[in-house]
Length: 69
Image (tube, rainbow, N blue to C red; front, side, top):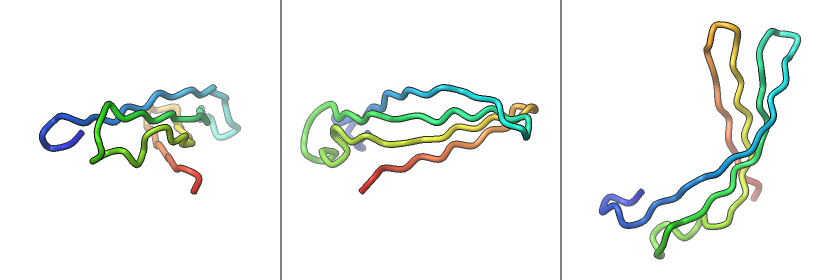
């Protein structure tokens, strides 16, 4: 979001979880970015990103996200 609150970037994601041998669950997936309007935040519009969300048995988690250039 810009400081004036006019432009907002939203991301919609899709992933599917799987258990690992280390007793964690990983969710590899994709992110689809969309900008609400304007030129200030136009660069991420329609970019597809990739992510991996991992949760351990105690509830700790990590999230890695990247886009292909």
